Length: 483
Image 1 (cartoon, helix red, strand yellow):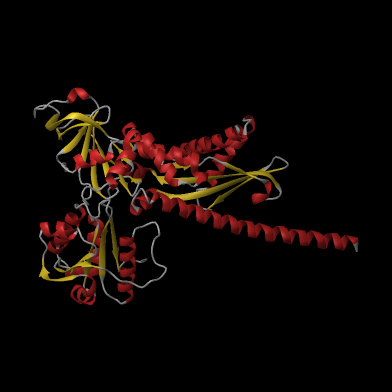
Image 2: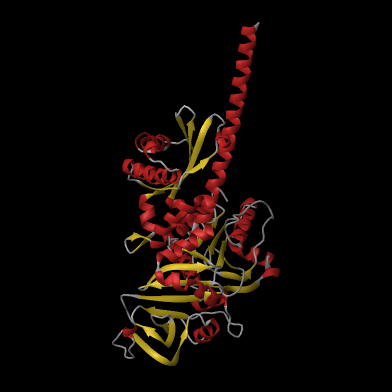
């Protein structure tokens, strides 16, 4: 009887352990999915979602459990072809270096550095970011373990990473410092602080001034938004007044004005535009209004809209700032995607001339300071009439460039047919209020997403080009497999 009881007790214990393991695996999987979504949502605030999808191939959660008998177990999620490589990289570190490192802080930092190095050594197709390891108590994951470590890996496609996240043939300085900040601060989950530190570490000029530029982008002058510009050249010796040299001065101030005198600087910016700028010197003082010829080392701040400005370095876009958050001004060509989706949606009924006309319309709209939407619908006339309460009906016409610039100043969409003829301006799109949308995206994108979903349900062929204020372009179509 005692033997039977012991066997029965062991079976019960085994069942409890098995049930616990299943529950543990379920909790682990849920945490992994939350962490992965959090990373993608936060990174999409500084990069277009399309570029993020091109670059990020997978996010991994790695747990290392150390048993009381000094054995260990490595768990990797998701369990794909990369799992073995990650486990091998972890094992190399544990077997060769882990025990030699005394302090816990050093162990966690070396985990990140060594595992990342081992993965790069085994595979040159990808770029890996590895967060600092975090130690958890024995009851967090497995009560049979003495202690546990958790770390997160991001796997980037190397070719796409270098293509879209570069600056002058190298990885963009902002991305370099973002990597450092993310690896050190991942567990704090304060991404705004991580982004801020990456900004100030990427360029000293930003470290000294970007808070001032945020304030200036928010200040209005007689109720007008700031659309001026500032130019900074490193050396004051470049101040000359003839066109042959680097700086052309139109108006020179009697007394310099410090950049921190925001209201005075904002007043001066009202006299500038994209071609005529407020000039500041090495001490970050405004001394003149003028322009700059080609120069090897200068910065230009362009104010676009309320809380929206961008920094050019040596004539190239360096970083943009929208609603106090940085974004990388990288571009992905929309033309191939536009043509492909038009072919799928309309088929042989659209000519190359029509495609070129629609392409030109999108390009002109994207070049404006304001975000907007262009709706291309086979039922453009009917849809414009249906939504006429929210917009303005116009007689069918192909829009001139000047008109495109004007209509992009108002809310709502431009409604055109597949030939590029416009039937409505400022059209507010409708759509069923349901759980469709991306919280990390703006109201314009989510409005288009709901409308295109409704059109798909009703069998109406439609394509929407969403142009955000930072000039990112999304193309949504009823022909998309997932809307």
